Image (cartoon, rainbow, N blue to C red; front, side):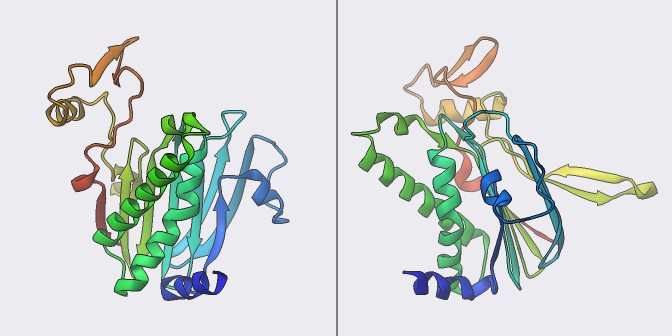
Length: 242
């Protein structure tokens, strides 16, 4: 098993170094001097990646953290993932454990990275989690109510690919006039607070009059949650030349 994973990793991420998951324990155990002593805050200073430098900081808002993230770097590519879980940590943890490996598998099979390959990696990860839910719901029924947003950025040979499910946001900054940094949102929110998303949900579920419900002044899907994934098939991935 380990040799198989090693062969996959050699395809695009060579060598691959896992810098960050959203877990203070993993970072603190790394003997990293930049890790902070605050139990709810941890960070890493600037590190090199294939197309520049990166850093990160994490503030934990809940006693049981439902979110995960990761940064994977190699000679030709850099992968960044942010997984905003809800209802529990199972979905975001599963994405953190499987999405990057699925991306490497598809990239190795086709010898490159593209928008279609990112979509395939997302679909494979979703199928894997749904299979886990079906196997586990008999002994752990609440797993059926767990979910996660998924925001990914991949830099591959000077091209930035961004894929998004949910309402996490990717923002790119560039120098504008007078050397001021101008921020531009790259992703489209999939959230029931947006009129176009509500109309899309209603068109996809014409027989369900309660697909979107106003509850406590907020539009929610089935009166439960704001985030929506129905529209991701055609809108979740974009590519930009850096």
